[in-house]
Length: 248
Image (tube, rainbow, N blue to C red; front, side, top):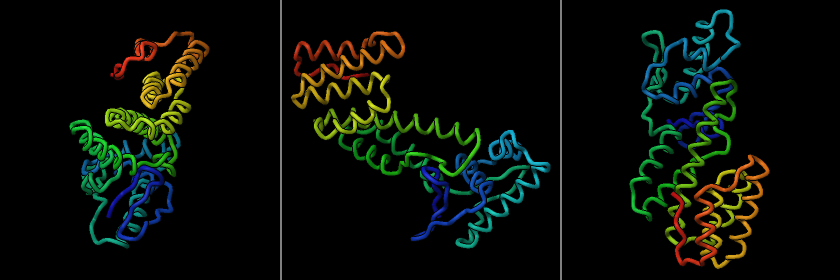
């Protein structure tokens, strides 16, 4: 059995997705999958599942959510995935059975690998991604996790693009970089990568135009001029340097 947090929260067995219809049971699965093979205390689970809307008897409500989750999992696997002990619960699953932990492991592996291998690891990590993690779980904790994971995804995506640029895949990356720059107009690192890709694809005028648009956006939005990174890449392009300084 495998568990998914990227997208809708779910469990999967070969050729089948298990439907966890109870919203509280889904939230419990998410909270336990976030820290697999670690006991999570009742109080923490109650906070993550109900937030400020705690039911009258929260421990009984938690027990009911656990019972519903176990019923779904046991219908398709004899393994006791959800374990009760010491005033808490544990999901007894190898982290590599959970997509978010596989994603993180691939990103870590990519960061230590030569460029060609790293590009493969980043690509595999991106294929695990879904635009909205914990998509069908509500609450403050779930929203906090979504923000954290989205930041991790963006950092991994940018790192992967840097690797691919070093491998010379400038033209292929321009559409993705344009989309990222549109979604994150104040992120100067993304703008710098787009400028580099355009320049190395023989589109020097577009690269310089990109700088001017970014400068205008920064001045209007936050009242600041571009930082050292963008200014350096801009200066490199103006000098028509064969290899502009890579963002760091």
